[in-house]
View 1 (cartoon, one colour):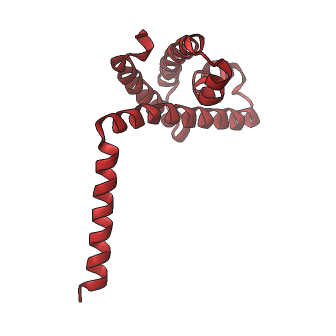
View 2: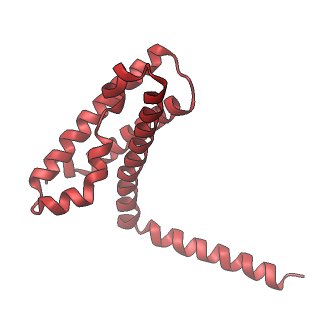
View 3: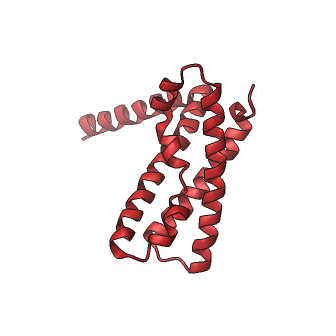
Length: 150
């Protein structure tokens, strides 16, 4: 088993991704101070390096490289440190809008990678079936009460 296929590593990486998502979203929706912004850029860059290494390790270990790229292209986008790349160019207002769109795309890509880990966990523990049955019971009970309760 490769280090990058280890469940503990995936859970740790998921926690780091969630923290990165929160920090990136914070920079998108509010005006953070300059020192905090640079700290967030450093943290995001470290996460991006980890994601690049993890992506290319799995890419070189895969049998069908074309299928791997088609299936996991969002992970490659998530590993691009847009903050670090665009930092010298954010002085222009129109470039700032493009930069925010790129950051938003990165947030979506990070979410998709995080939800793959959550999906794996739910299916492994059969919590997806439990949630589905619970939702069905709640909906059926609500509908029954609505239709038959005077």
